[in-house]
Length: 378
Ligand SMILES: Cc1cc2nc3c(=O)[nH]c(=O)nc-3n(C[C@H](O)[C@H](O)[C@H](O)COP(=O)(O)O)c2cc1C
View (cartoon, rainbow, N blue to C red):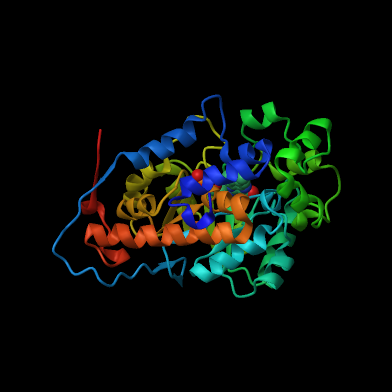
């Protein structure tokens, strides 16, 4: 299938599945646990939405713009931070950030990114960049990363807190996924099936955790340091004292924790289960959203992510009170399917779907999207 014939993100996903080795697709597509329930439930929650459209309204002009953490965005959308992005396609983070810039939305670079803080800023200076921080066992290193992000013009730190330890991702275990992918008899056999992906990998700069190269040790050592099980709310207080810019806490999953991080100075929360990749049977962000919104009033901004595959999902989340919605897999499917052009196709599809959904709903501004626009079917 041609990229332009992909009618949905699901079509792009199918294309991605054919283009890259199974271990790479599964790493992106998969979630935690035997039946990947956290992710499945997140998707099912959107399927329960029944919009309540108003008709006989002039919907010629739709304004999808909104303010996300103090700045105007053309769409209520964020490209979420994802690690190992260059494994999906060597174009990696710069390609994703360029598309984000064209769409007029923020992009979050991961601590586990495969392009460094500085290289991304140099490659795409005009993109609105957020830096996603994993607080490592070495807090001094955390300060260093925050300072580097500040110096390179990132305006928001996203502290991810749903990773005291890595989740149990069964597909990766079964596939024997190694990062970076190793040349073994099995992978050589795979080259025959996915020659383009292997050429792309082997003829581009070697995969590395670009931001972390100054740390020493193997990848396993590194990951053990990146996921710190001892992190507490005191660390948020500490981060708040060293970073005066906008601070968002990502991976909040209950009303109480949303209130707690707001009380400790967060400017925003991202209700997220890491795309269902961490705790099995986690709460569904879309379902807890109205309660979190109510508990927080307008004190902090509330974003959500997890299982968003269409513009209709985005609009539904806004109706339930989200400031904006983040997507991870959606753009990674595009990246795997066709590099930067694939990410652009996904961005365009989401943008067009948001506009069409709003027009058919009879709402022409983001501010008009509220709980009166939908009900949830049993
Ligand atoms: C392949 C992959 C890698 C990810 N890496 C990170 C990461 O390094 N840091 C982080 O905070 N979240 C990471 N996430 C989670 C995303 O930021 C986001 O929460 C999630 O993808 C949202 O769900 P969705 O993929 O269904 O849109 C990753 C997600 C995926 C799919």
